[in-house]
Image 1 (cartoon, rainbow, N blue to C red):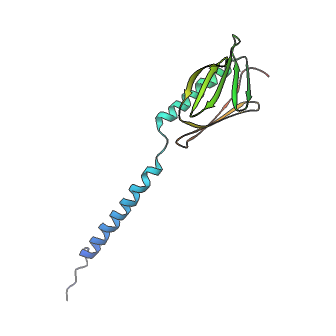
Image 2: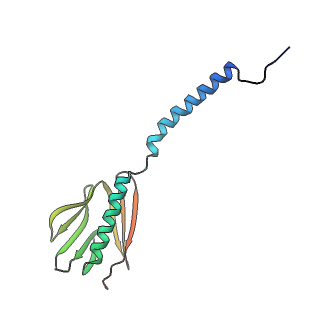
Image 3: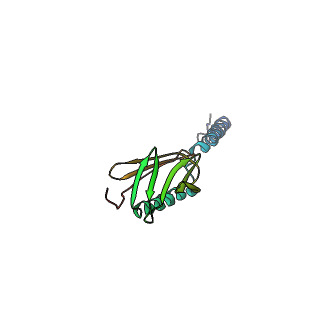
Length: 137
């Protein structure tokens, strides 16, 4: 009796197709959870960090009270940078509402020799920066 061992049988082919489709369905369910933070939001956070660093280094004094960063500018204005709802906002002399960054879940500012900033976005991305002020304390 002659037996052909060079190819797939019909049952093997159907099982292969079925397993491939099963893996594809599982993959389609997992892909939305593997989404990295948008590059646009990452760009916004890095731009905010750069702007904040420049503002800190050009201020005459900086201090932190209740997770709010206070800066005294060279002309004597008091600038506060704080987390408000889903924004990081900037106020000058307690007035105004300039939005510096959107979609922020958590904003933490701590001070030691340098100023440490931690931002957690609504997309669960975490950003960290350390800024060393030029002014002596």
